[in-house]
Image (cartoon, rainbow, N blue to C red; front, side, top):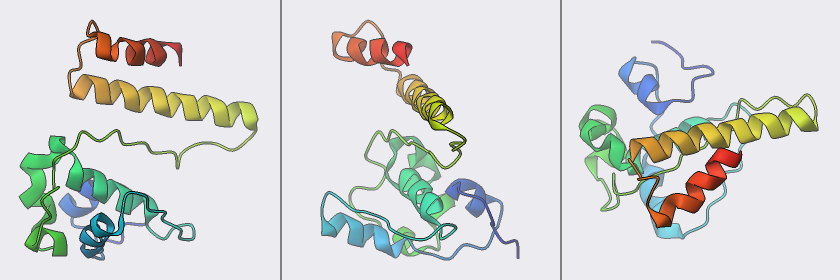
Length: 142
């Protein structure tokens, strides 16, 4: 059995047969608790992996992979009505270097730019649409 030390991508953990402690039962509880949730856990306690799990569960881009990723897990046996129903802008800040303030800002803006580009391209938002022109303008300024 492979231990997923340092891995924070849910899809990789599942598809590459790493040991996975099923915490997906918490997804339904999170939906019932309210709009704002805070995950407070020490380092290396799986926060990023759990957020990746939520991304794969809620994002419409992963709808065709639901059975492959969630079969045999608690939420796969009893999915909520909200599964794969959102366009998720997933941000991952765990790789930000903390050398100095300038480096933190540089890495932070790079991550936002990268994830925003992926989001806009994956969902094929038209650049000429007035509703998204401000978003594209902001993206280019980062």
